[in-house]
Image (cartoon, rainbow, N blue to C red; front, side, top):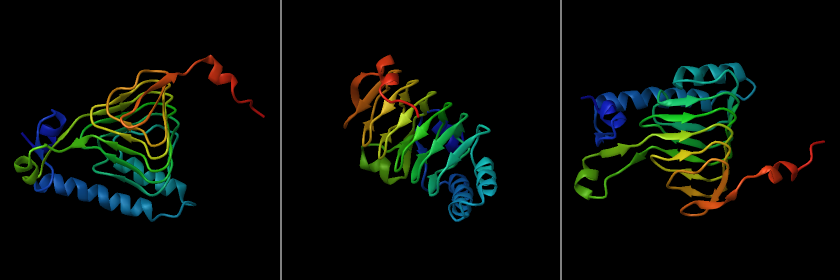
Amino acid sequence: MKEMEKAAAGLLYDANYDPEVLAQRDVAKNALFEFNHTPPSQLDKRRSILRSLIGKTGENFLIEAPFHCDYGFNISLGENFYANVNLVILDCTKVTIGNNVFIAPNVHICCAGHPLDAERRNKGLEYAFPVTIEDDVWIGAGAQILPGVTVGRGSVVAAGAIVTKDVPPMTLVGGNPARVIREITEADALKYREA
């Protein structure tokens, strides 16, 4: 079984020394170098670079530079996706992001983790669990989404939150570790007036 197949199966895999894994990461690094150094005015070129890197994108998406990921091909983006600067996605396995998702600056989405025992960790072994972010989610600045988490539809992750377990739909979560602060209700739609 190849190392990325092990990762997809949730097994320990060699993330640091396997030549095929390293080559796949080099492809992503080169594409990201080009993306991160392409002027913002060249939006079509920037989108083209990301479409060649990312497994699936919607028709309408915008990722501000700099952006970093491990592989790219494990990422799936829905329609109307927006990510502000310094998004990091450690996509050692599937990262599925739904429609109308907005991500603030300095957010990390991490599928990867390392064994607690030093012997295995020192061999370069790690594990990867998929992350899912459902439709209509807003993730605040500096939040971290950890391996195996699903962020439910319509929810909001507060700035600085460390999300270690699933987020129920239509809730506001925050803190370290993140916990449900309250439900998002119809009253929230009335809080701000449109011009």
